[in-house]
Image (cartoon, rainbow, N blue to C red; front, side, top):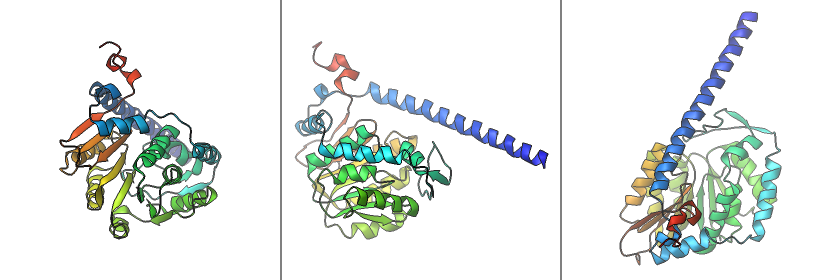
Length: 298
């Protein structure tokens, strides 16, 4: 028995070391991808497309604090204390931070929910676009859903989540915040998306944050693209999360229907407005990341 216990402890230590090494390698590659992004990035002073520049000013440079931000972040603070464990069914690329099947709610929020700064970008993007409808793919516990919904997004608003237990927690959070009218569709994206899209005559705003694999992400993009209109905006999360996601993002940008794209490393924005005569693609960083691009030295 002592030998078996000792073996189990040794195996546990080995798995822990392997997990730490996987994370270390991931962050090294992630840093390399950021440096590559940074060398090719632009500030607001380098963006010469009037449409994209106006989008950046409103979404990225507007620092007003809206009424909804406090309530959403109070909910996040409560969830970060929640030790309740739920069973995770992951149909995508999985979590590098915690691949365990059973996870505490606080762990899911810490590693899976959008940070406040990203949530605020989503909120202002909805304010800028003023979409007639929204589709979110990747509900998690509903933090990003709330940022999208409380920006004034109208119905139909559907959010999709593959994991039943996670979806149930998200529903509770949405009801708690007065957003019980958001419909949560549960099941694998590959099976549920065609059915969901049949309910949209046109898809005005898409937030894709799930299944971080190249083939799957690009396939979902193509399916949603069939419903896109000239004023639609698609937002793709974690576009530099992996080599696969970078490849998927490059394929999306290259699609002939995409007239402009904006990449801030964390999110990718795709635009389809034909008034943009020739395709333009920008990698955006705040001016203080590259002060020599601020116009001061020109």
